[in-house]
Image (cartoon, rainbow, N blue to C red; front, side):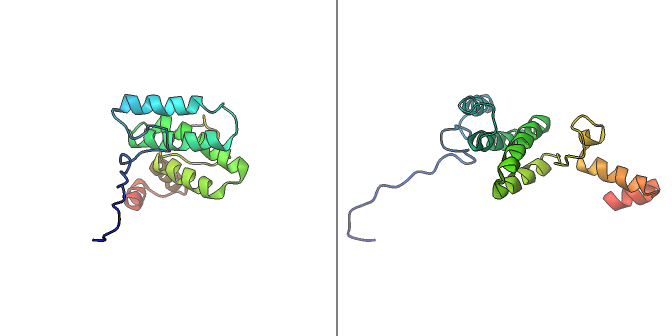
Length: 143
């Protein structure tokens, strides 16, 4: 199209790749997990922004692997770090991912309480039943 010198073409990284250097988009699941864990090892388990930025894509990856309990643990950690720093765009992303993994971030609920272990749909059933609705009405409401 032009007569100027040809520019080198940039190659896109693998689809779904995580942050640069995380190796999150490469190869088999076990290799990807090893890369995520190695990236976490680069950041001490403190409240640093970089640690949270590493926890978040790992939690996202775990959710895509359908490892929801593991994902929620990592996503809650990232959300806690971001929230403590006031990094609102990151808080929003972590909260969205946590909800997608079936989790919630309600400090009023202890992590080990029975209701905290319920899925969002299960919590909705409990909420509706607690208002006195019959099971037929509850099933229509969620169905």
